[in-house]
Amino acid sequence: MTAKQFYDWQTSGGTDDVMRLVACLESNDIPWCAIGGVAVKILAWSDTSRRQSKRIKDFADIARLVESHPSLWDRLSPELREQVERP
Image (tube, rainbow, N blue to C red; front, side, top):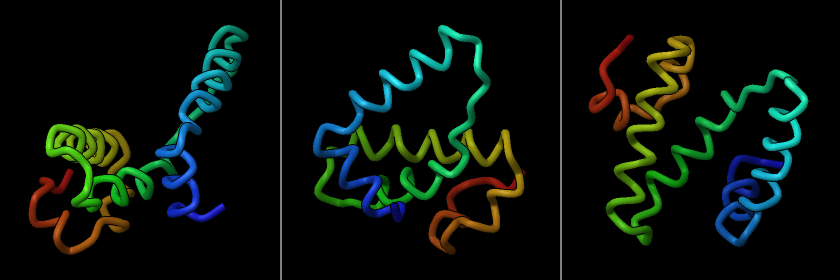
């Protein structure tokens, strides 16, 4: 599944499926990570049809991911690199 397909699935109701999976993982103390989700956040942030407040939240999520995982900096677009401080 590409990042775009994942984003489309999420915005059409797939979030409930993910939340059920996360709940199962956490209730069983199984570690998990969604670093690959930075691509989905970038797609969501760049979707101008979404509400401004949602896009701002996506931008903050991108910045937090990059702060926690500096290697993600290389995956950012030039536009995002101008706005997100390099870790």
